[in-house]
Image (cartoon, rainbow, N blue to C red; front, side, top):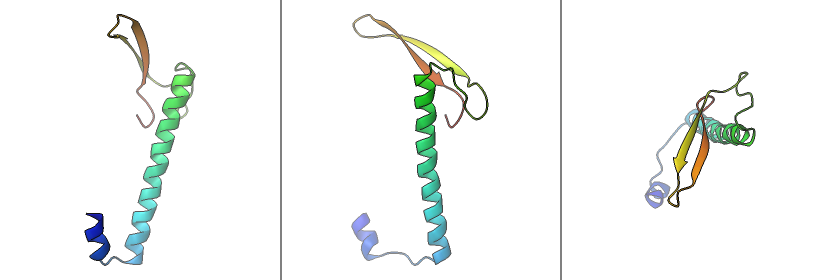
Length: 80
């Protein structure tokens, strides 16, 4: 697909190209920020502030294949 598009690139205006670029940069930033929110949330054990308030969470318990019971924090606020 990429090879075809390289040889048959559609004509777009500079304004459209700029809008696509800005949208792409915004999506990369949102991805980074959502990963950072999840990281901070898990590192603090859910005791942190996201978007100005304490986040809602689910504490999920599960059993591994060898019978260990484990817990996982699931973030319900922010980008998630």
